[in-house]
Image (cartoon, rainbow, N blue to C red; front, side, top):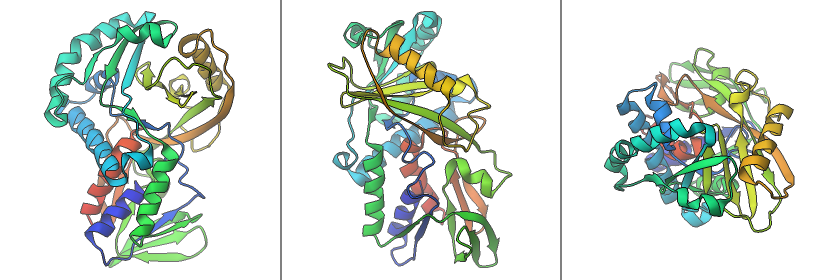
Length: 351
């Protein structure tokens, strides 16, 4: 989000001096810790959103995700980010038959709503025919989103960083902001290095961590735990996959399986700024790997990590002016890959 906002700001104001402050060695919140899903919402997730938000808000948000992914690909190029248009699948277990039929009956409505901004008449459709080949356990049905895909998170961030450097944008790492205060002609930031930094305009794009600067914001951290296997001989599937309303997600990475989720097992415990993994969630991920994703196959866990998302009472983001000199672009609701480029651009347009 921050690099996208900086890049779009420089495009708008070529003569401006633009500085990005990154508190870590790398962008550590979710930018380099996410699972690499280029997604904008499964049928189950959209119905979940429609239960708490009016349709106009839900589909406006989905449009922003879809347009954001298009802008990301246009800005960096598919090759640079290793974008794969592999599609997105939603799994329904044997105890979710009512939910599956609810989603299936809603597909004409969802397809019609999304066609208005995607230009595709049939985005979601049944894909039960793949079940046998994929070899999933405890799974009765599959729904498919043909417009989703995956990308290489690390290469995406490197490409964004290189793009910023090419536009003469300075990026400083290892410098955090302790506070940002507005004054008559700009903002003053108190830095973790002990210095003070003045800027005419400031965009806050630190997602889950925004409430540490502005405690009144309704932004909470949501830790997401992930693991990845070693290569698996004859991996029977490719694509991106979700189940349990998006709380669990996995995809192929070459011949490996990247699998994450489980925040719903401990909402309170996972509302945390602590970058670590927990035994009970990691054990559940391994159980689902063994019982649902890779039944009958041997696998080894090669790495585990966690990222921290910015969450609110629903999936809507925050994009507004904190004051005359400060713009907030935070709380991406776990959809930062999809939203980052577009909301960064919208933030730049507010300068």
